[in-house]
Image 1 (cartoon, rainbow, N blue to C red):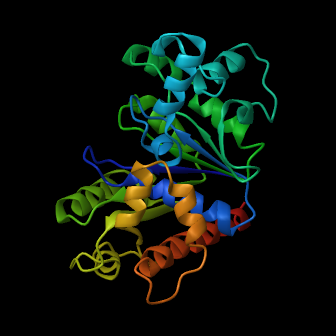
Image 2: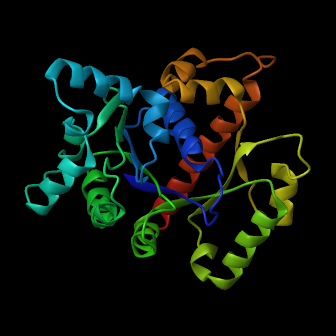
Length: 281
């Protein structure tokens, strides 16, 4: 049982959310883990949109119940879970009651807060560490996508309790250097539980995993989730689960082969890191 936090110190897009989507979906299919994904985004439904067309579902409920869209409240959601946590009625399995299922007994998603009020969002964000503690008793792996909009105090608390932190960067020299500066200034990022991931990776860039690993003096190769047109299209259409089911096995000459190979490499690196950390306890 472990918490894996996806995080970036960059304001601009690093492919962080979809990197997590790719990794967790692949792992849920290829390995016998019970996995939870947590979306902490404020007005950001990137993860949900990768699996479902929730807007269509909301409109259907609205039409059937004759309610306005903003009055439609689904049983699944962090708002309901926070109410239970604050009432001290939690159990080890309570989190799963407020998630949406991707693969039964394999992959669940805790949706982002529905609120459009940032002050209300900040109130909800205070409970993510409590949710992680409860979920970690019921899931083998809990992945949390840390929003850049979350208050820094809450980000720091999540990073402190995470078993593994996946730092997301891009293939830009300024981005790489900024993280190196951060690592120099903050000893927290020199810990042994850090993995570095390049999102939307282009293997033809001179900043490939081999060169970036050498430049950053990484003993083990930097990880990557390559840019893949079919993957990004499936995410935009809510069909990412189908995408990975279809690609459970691919030939070496398949256009998706490199994409799947890198995700498999990422998976093995994460599992190894978790085992390594467990042995040191």
